[in-house]
Image (tube, rainbow, N blue to C red; front, side, top):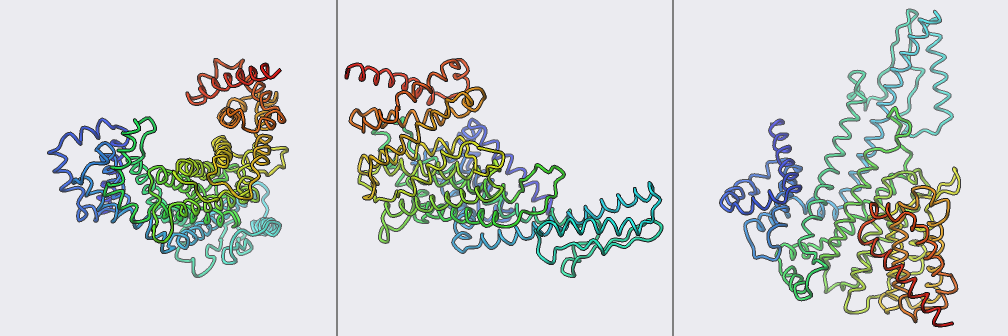
Length: 573
């Protein structure tokens, strides 16, 4: 049975990957109507797939989604659609909604984290014991000194080292190196039991490694299905995201048909979008909890390896949840009960939770070693991307939204731009990724535009003060990007997305002649843009190979914007 389950898992994974990477293959499967019918009658029935492990079932659901994406998302019900509905309720809902609503995940994750730390401590102890025994044998051979004396000295040295460092384990995980006894012939007998509760794990010298492997398997059995389910639903939601390039009539028609789709109505009825908001909140809270704990014992030989699977998996899950939530917003699936709250209320709640998660992550990155983790950028990238999508949807609304953007929100997002480079080796200020910084500029720009349009405007806002503050911030960032120290390395080239987003914000704001022209002149915005473009000029050939068409268009428009403002200044004189 074990080999049968493994074979089914590998087969489903291979099929999922093949359909995911080869749309032509998926299209051919759809064309083979007779084979498809036979295939669905057997493989996609719940009574058949229910006997498979959960990862196998999820990969099969992923295959269904790949086929569904190529079919008409607005079409009437079919065998394929019905199979998706059935498996959505049986596979995806328990993982993404039921366990989240019952608060199952936080308790399970904390217990698995505890087990992992204990396994690391045990594995490290046994490895240190082996190393100590090897050193004693070597010194006995070299010095001809009695093993008892060497063992006593080694044990005292290690005990002193332990006393000088804060313990990272619970009391039942402490190691007493003085329990080791050595005979006069140089042989070593080490106490291999720590407590009666752990004796069942210690059958031979590799038990620590086996326990570590077992705990990681248990962790993967929980986090693996969650991550895969998030990926599958994220792909499914793309079926109902209208393309910006569609004709207005086709765009409206596609939205109307998508609203009537049974599978989408099922997602809305389950309040799936709000479920993803709460899932994101749960993951971020556990990420904060994890970094509040002492780091687990270092078990890798490479001392620079500060990553561990639990931390990495949680942050990857946060990134995938953010992607899923973004698609929920883009496809109009946020969920909720219109009799209890309005769509605007749900947007406000989503924004507040996103800001809360971002503030928590910034605090964690500032106070812990997480500031140096590259995986932390996955979290900030995902959160800020969701905020960008939410503001875009809010601005597209037909009626003004409630004032949900506060002054403190502006300060938090602005902080993402001001933490771009270390001032010294001892500086623990978190470094933000390029994508996070670009999203921050976009968020701040849309906050200004929303306030000008009267959408989402806080009654306490002083718009001119806000515009002046953000203009000053953007000018300083643009000048820092074009400074000589940045241009002499690859830093300037890698930060071009941030620079182009600032240029785009300035053009959106000050492209309107009546938009605070005195602020534009006060902070020398035109000179800052000219200086930045001048720094990029010698690198025009290299630019074409490193930037995308969107950034290239912004740089071209920025040059025209400079010429336009210069003409205005000449005319004013």
